[in-house]
Image (cartoon, one colour):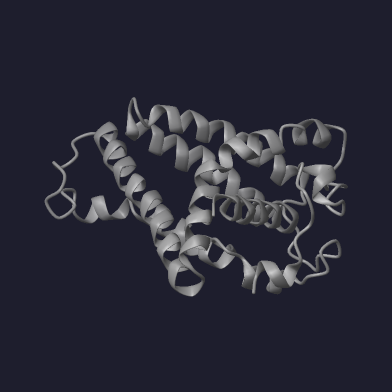
Length: 219
């Protein structure tokens, strides 16, 4: 059972890498995102408000900017798949879902403008510092809610294991991305805009055993 769980985690990670991380700029931004997320993880136990601010303003913005602005959205010749097909089979948040999530995040501070008490949950903010700390608390809920919503959603549209594997992947992505994309900034400085190794068998690039068959991954 554990072996199968780890195998599914391996497949989700490899699919995410080969389908959505062609650009060296995107990979470099993921490296920055991973570093800041690890800082946010540590700070979660010190000051969750600071953790939320770093997680959303640095980690998430750099991460998603790479996907939206630098990753190719044309036909994927390496994987022989259209962008629409990849969006359809995406286990986690595809670009359309990310737009919704990021819109909720960006608009959520307006709730405190309309109702500074947030329906009685907060003491009305009296300064910019108070406002940002309360916004950060909302962002913590948005982040946790987004993670739990998609996990439970996957329980119903796929199965419980897929949902739990995806949640594990998301929570451990900063550690994995740090190792996976550590050389991307240097490659980018050499003028390499696209990863030339995505066509290789994953055992040569990520230490995986073999490349999963597409039909088996997303049946």
